[in-house]
Image (cartoon, rainbow, N blue to C red; front, top):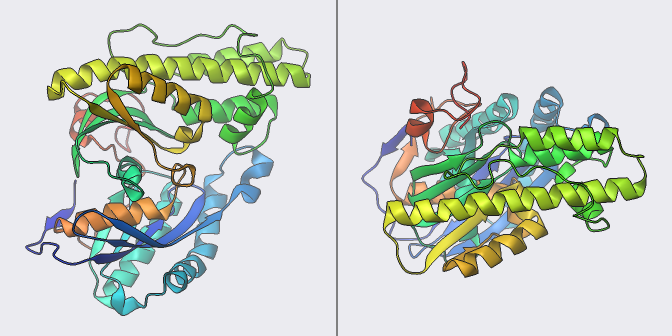
Length: 375
């Protein structure tokens, strides 16, 4: 990963790392102890939600998010340290999300981490938020490399071959919107409330998933890319011609969720084929799902069934680690520190930072501009 400096140190004893996460609308801090064998003790995991600040707008407002991070981050760090039972002398390193994300929030967390690292003389790990998600299942169970990763969140939808720490091979990505964006847009169109993903799932449980015909974008294609813009548009049109009743809400939510799930399963199935071709794995492999959308129960059930049918073990983090949290950032920082990878104090905050940066720059899938490729 860019900006990291390889140090000569190797891990021979437990490492205790403070992680900070502020890439979107969660201000979070966590203290984690990482052992040489990969075992993890989570000593604290504090998350301050901004849902109430953003609820009136039906989505995250970047300026409001940045100001909330500034107000909350100092107290959240103090609470995480106190809850962990550690003092600053017992912290071996400071990790923080350095991107991708809303730049105001990213700057707040990263500058806080830099200040602590400089004042305390501790190593700094500037962590890719997506790498935090990619490693998050390792917080609670054994998940050795390599594995196939479905990373689905509010800003990203990707399928990656995870070969090792910092070593990612893109198999597929969204060419327009992310899955989480589609969930949020669906909730906003129907006035279901914020955050969108959980609201859609709640209403879907009351509806008929076959009630409304919606597209399954990219289904059957011989690649592993996603597209969700057309599905978003179809939902908006279906809502426009509905009677706006609670039954209409439930049926459209259920139909959207089913379309999303079937689309994802088709794309993951194609990625499984590509994964085996590229890695040469012929036996039992591993499928990992991570990111906020990974909390959706219908998607989880479908992925588990697909994995079993294709000789993949299915691994997913507990629901509390699917959304943005600092535990995954502390873990990514600890693994990087254990590998001797630390960052300089000029490590930049990045609004965009694909895990597979080389491939994304060479062949961007979506969102290319002055900020670089989104995927």
